[in-house]
Amino acid sequence: PLPEQVEVLRRSGDITRGREAFRGCRGCHKADAAGVTDGTYPRLTGQHASVVIKQVTEVRASVRINPKMEPFSADHAVSPQEIADIAVFLESAETTRENGKGEGDFVTKGKKLYEQGKCMKCHGINGEGKPEKAYPAIAAQHYGYLKREMDYIQRGVRGNSHPDMVKAIQHYSHREIEAMADYLSRLPDYRQSLAERKAN
Image 1 (cartoon, rainbow, N blue to C red):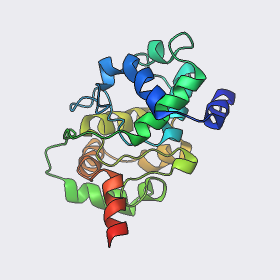
Image 2 (cartoon, rainbow, N blue to C red):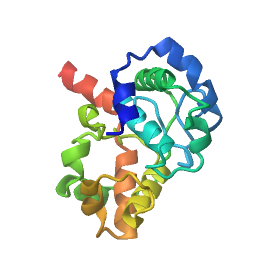
Image 3 (cartoon, one colour):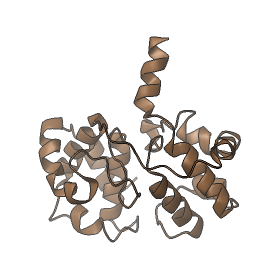
Image 4 (cartoon, helix red, strand yellow):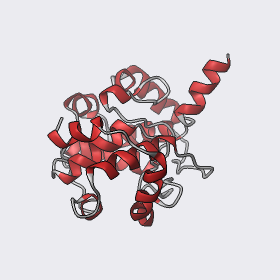
């Protein structure tokens, strides 16, 4: 991890301060952090704080290539403490808006690819990710965003792709990527899945 990532992870974030600091992010990610259904901007509600911190600090360090995000993550735009605050705010945030989904024609195929490939090992059976390793929750993410980012990872243009992720999807066809993105977009928010499992 980058030195700044370690520094931010050590800080205690504050949800109230994070909600206020997130104002600068609302233009793209919207007030409820649900992003845009076409996937131009991702859904951030419920994303693990460790993931938010990793991605923002890596954009700041030009490790992740994201020109749209760079001005909003730069040193003059947000401090390390504000990153920690925004991260805990997003982890707790919820939205009532539906996320963007694909056409639904190959969801069964997408489920099979996800479960039989190596994806589930890191991202979990319910797409919940692993906060302790900063693996993102991908359940209920916008279809368009999932599809685009997997394409970026395949083509090596994202910049901070985990080597295991690159290997896991490098041989998938465009149609297989679409199928898996559609399946993941239709999974419920992982927090809902956790609540249901606890209730049972």
